[in-house]
Structures are given as structure tokens and as C-alpha cells.
Amino acid sequence: MATSFHRLRLQDWQQFHAIDIEFHERLTILTGANASGKTTILNLLAKHIGWDVPSLAVPHRLATGVFQWFARWIKGRENNEAVIGHLSYENGREAQLTVPRTESATYNVSINGREAVEFFFLPSHRATYRYHPIGQIPVQRITKDQAFQRVFGSTKDRFFGGGGQSPSYHMKEVLIAWSIFGRGNVDMPADSELLSMYQGFEDTLKKVLPSTLGFRRLAIRNMEIILECDTGDFMLDGASGGLSAVIDLAWQVYMFPHTEETFTVLIDEVENHLHPVMQKRLLSDFLAAFPNVRFIVSTHSPLIVNSVRDSAVYVLRYAEDRKVRSTRLDIVRQARTATQILDEVLGVSSTLPTWAERDLQDIVNRFSTRTMDESQFSALREEVTAIGLGDYLPQALGKLLDARAR
Image 1 (cartoon, rainbow, N blue to C red):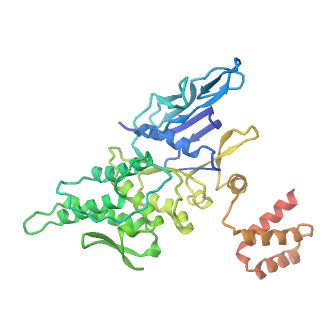
Image 2: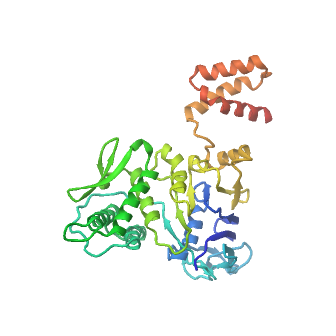
Image 3: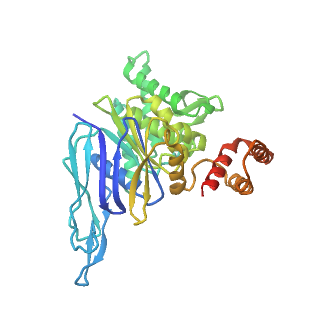
């Protein structure tokens, strides 16, 4: 019987000093600067499904003057301590995470006592669709499980250096076969299950594709899959990087074979290829479309971080000892503190444009030494509005308060 991830703790391994992440029942977001360990954490969880990305050891000089590889190094101690953390599951059980005493540059973390978890993992490098005509229609009956494996398998092959067809090619094969055999003809009975899966994916796209696109339905013309939209029709292979990322995710979540009611999806750098408006809508749309799915994602985007109220947001940041610690942000009840941390880690706490940031700062500097009464507040508002930044008055006031607090 499968379970879910509950809590991950890591200590004194690689760039980490103390990581403590309790996974939310619907959405967990990991954010932080480059090299803070977001991908490392997702790769660690992905080992449960054979996503074995090796870790790299570091050579250290021993007291004898000889360099030796260490998967875990504690200054002043010439040994490699085995235990680096623990991973607990929703069923109450816990696995121990250990590293070997390695003699090479690469090694693998062991998860001792791992439990079965139903999930899949999307790495940060998204596949772009490329055109390739369908050579022949599959005559074997294709299940949802097989539909998932065709696309997920090509994703995994590309990540580990393989080749193969574009995901859109596999999607076209499956959808065309499902439509033909699902509807049947005078000589062949209709397969209602195949037709239901075809229409189910079509309905999923209606929920997760941008509303501005006006997606209406899938169509088959000249043995090609066409997306018919209010803004104009286009071939599946011609979807932009952003749309293909959404379609690819929708396909794999919809098709994923699972025995439990709930399963998990891991996504590294979920904002890749997405327009800011799509970044703000992506997670809320997928949570609504798939109410029984848990998402664990990493991101550099503040638009993603702030996109869902009911979620757990963890920031990974370097402390004074230059080691990474995790902090859970309270975006709702301690928004000011959360914003300050995001500003520290990501360098952007909001979507304020760079030019607006500079102009607002100039105004704040002039008002920071004045006594703020009603007339001065009105003057501040007039200056901000006069340069076309009236919508950013709250940010100006926040900066003014920060300046006075220093």
C-alpha cells in the first residue's frame, strides 16, 4: 500500500546545515537562490522511483597530507559519518538517509527503510515540441498507464542523455488512436473507455490552459492533433514553450497510473517557459483541476511563491556560516517578514519593475526626513501618481516605513 512523504530532515551534508521540511497536504513550495539545494532535495525524493542522480564527493586533505574523497566531511575529523538525515512518511514510518565511505568522485545516497510512494518527477529541463508526422496508427489498445509511460519515459531518457521522439509525437499517437477506436465505425464497435479518456484529457486542457487562449476542443485534421481556440487554431507540435510545458504537465498528471486516491507530483523550477500571468495561475489551476493530487515544486519566481494561499513555502538560504538552512515562510500572517526574506534570498520580493523601484526610492529618500502628516501624505501620493506609479503607493509607503525604522 502506497503512502506519501511527510517530513524531510537533513543535517551537515553537502551545502546543508539544517533542513527541516514538513510537506503540505496539497502544495509545498521550495524557493531559494541558485545552489541552495532545491534540486538536490527533489532528486533525493525522486530516488523512490529510480531517478538515481549520483552525488559528487569532495576531496579533502588528511593529516597525512593525502587527499581522500568524502561524501560528508566534518572539519578536523578524518571520517565520513554515515547518517545525513531522516525521511518520514504519512503512514508513520521513517527511513534513514545515509552516505557511503566513498573512494571515488561519485556516490549515491541510500534510503534505508524507504516506503512505496506513488508520484512522478519532472526535471527543470522541459522538452520543446518538434514536428514529426505519425507514420502509422497504433493497432494495440493503449491504456492510460501506457500513455503516461510513453511521455514520461521520453522525458527521463532525455534527462539522462538519451534521445527519442518529442513528447508531442507520443501524444498524437495516443490521441488519434483513442479518437478512432473510441468512436468506432460501422465495422468496429466503439470503445467507450478510450473515448472517455480522450474527452477527459480534452476537459483537463480546458481547466489548465490560459483562459485568454479560449481553448474549445481537440480536433484531428490530416492525422494531426489540432487545438481549436478562440484566438486561432494551431497544431499540437506548434505549441509555444509555455503552452507545451502546461500541456506536458496536464498529460502526465491526467494519465499517471495510481492505486491510491492521492498521489504526488514533483516539479523542479515549475515556472520554466511560463509567462508571468501563467506563473500566477499555474498551481491554483492544477490544484483545482486535480483535487486529489499533492504538488512539491521548486521555483525562483515570487509569482509562484505567492500564488496559492493554502500552501507550505520553505526558503533555503545561506546563513553566516555559509551553510544552508530551511525556513518556513508565513505568507499570510507574517507577510512582512516573509517578504523581507524573499527580498534577501531572491532579490525580488514583488513584481515591481526596476525602473519603478528606482523612481520610488528617489521619492522615499526625499520624504524620509519629513514629518508625515496628512498634507505630506497627500504630497507623497501626488508625486507617485504624477510619474505614473499610483498603483505602487503601498510599496512606497512600505519603503518609507523601512527607511524610518533604520
